[in-house]
Image 1 (tube, rainbow, N blue to C red):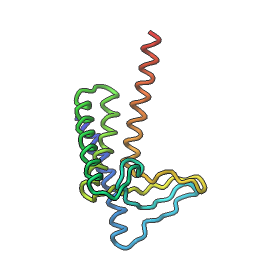
Image 2: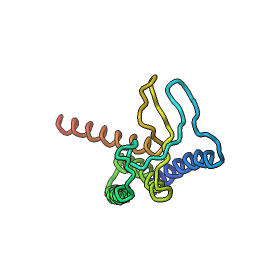
Image 3: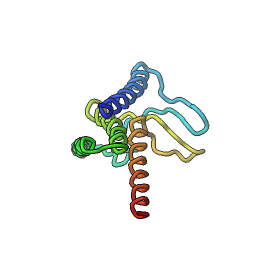
Image 4: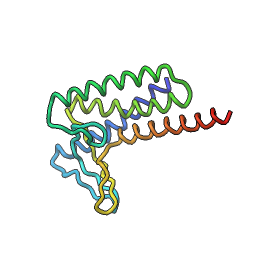
Length: 155
């Protein structure tokens, strides 16, 4: 039950933030906010995969990628059901973010990205809250595996 709660909370946080910014744009408000010297809010529509990679104009490629992402989500949910301990929480974080982006791909036919992190003129890829959740979950899974490997090899 905790796993589902985590997924739902993260999904809803992602939905709220994205819908807030999309509604601003639909009401004629320019979604281009200067936050600091290294962070802006700038709404763009991503038709690719994570961080705008593989953005193509082809509907067939877009739909194919969406189907692959849906199957990946099903695989993650399968692993979530089988997982225990910290793995289940980290997978829940990944799934919560991934389902948020998958929803957008299906509903909007693109994912709204809006966090523009940059250092001077070097801009990282524009991303969103769901991407943060996915990244945190994956980094956590990698860290757990690294520490588990070190512990196993020490024994």
